[in-house]
Amino acid sequence: MRAWSAARGSALLCSLLLLVGGCSRRAPSPRPGDIGADTGVVEESIGPGADSSLDLAREGRAAGEGTALRDVYFPLDGDELDDAARGVLDGNLAWLNDNAKTRVELEGHCDSRGTVEYNLALGARRAKAVQDYLVGQGVAADRLATNSYGKELPVCREETEACWERNRRVHFVTGRR
Image (cartoon, rainbow, N blue to C red; front, side):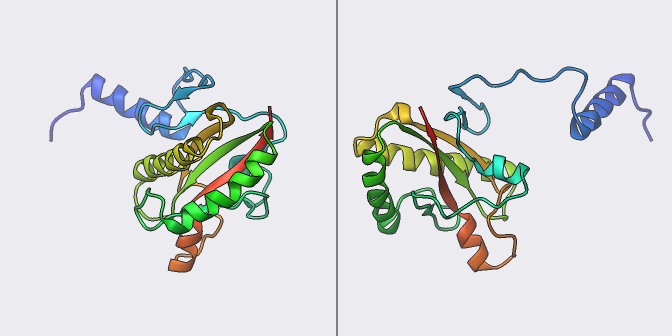
């Protein structure tokens, strides 16, 4: 068996420390408008008063389906808007037009299948598809931010098709400008 070199040992130790909580230096915090290099996720806050799925999870509450804006659902591995999704978005447009000072974060979510990386990228593509549609319908682009949680913040945790369908969505979070 080959002996471990100091470089291999250091690399392994740093990798383990990263998994546990990071090496001695933290990565810089993302700035509004930054795009994650690996996922295409826009890390941008939409302002005070918003309850993102992450905020709700931190408080021990489930992400709501009881907001004024309805979630848009996607098929397995899909990021294209079908007729049902466009119908939901057309219904959301009336509320968006009536609330022109409201910013909206579009959260991309996935079911529990697939890798973390794959699902983060898929969630980002789903959120971007919704954003592109809304901008195409006249919603100002500066009112919309996107984020992807991948499979990390499900609304349903059962390993069933009905549950997976509920998790494959773009969730709308509103906040004031």
